[in-house]
Image 1 (tube, rainbow, N blue to C red):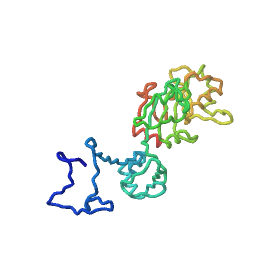
Image 2 (image 1 turned 90 degrees about the vertical axis):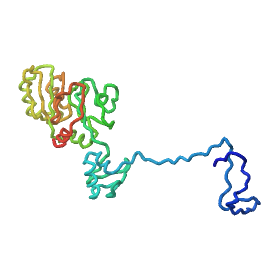
Image 3 (image 1 turned 180 degrees about the horizontal axis):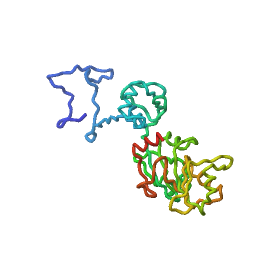
Image 4 (image 1 turned 30 degrees about the horizontal axis):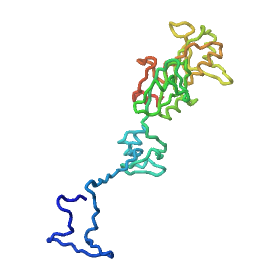
Length: 291
């Protein structure tokens, strides 16, 4: 409330409108229509009331949550939600525009999903870089890649520091599980450099299966590489564990000088120099899921 300029307020009222004054118990007069106005000094300024709108950054529309999980588009998510295929914390939600928190449990068609957009990155790993989670130094493979949307990625399988070649990163737990389970069916091709020429009889032993620590290890194919020394071997097998490849040759008394993964589930090193990475195309992701 601001004082008007000129003389001080005298308490007199306009003759055109006389409010009904009454006296309270103390004898002071006040208006029945208005409460006594607070007094302000000339230096006082009326405070403006700031209304804060509460915004929960952790909330996201349910259709976007479903779409970000990678199971379908946002438009299709609306259809699934209206059809009752989506549950939030165990309850079916069909309301369009419904918002959920990142801490909520969202179930899509019987499977729990997460709102992170799935990403898939292929790296041509150079030598002397570790894939160990606990080794976060400057020579960790995670230092070589960058997620387009800053999601947390992890490599599929492990590679020791001396092994090079194709390494796939993703935040898709289903993809990680697919390529790390013992019964996974996708093929990988490794180029192996030995400290000496591989004997033909040892090549046959590998082709027929080698027993290592009581377990029979089979390869799909093992061959000499055309135009190279007999110490350069190509191995095709389903495992993504490069340690198994090393163990095969070390079991037969060979030292592995170099080990390079040149094909991973149909993905190759074409146009991908050592130390470089790229995001997989949508078609490549579809192929991986169907592999």
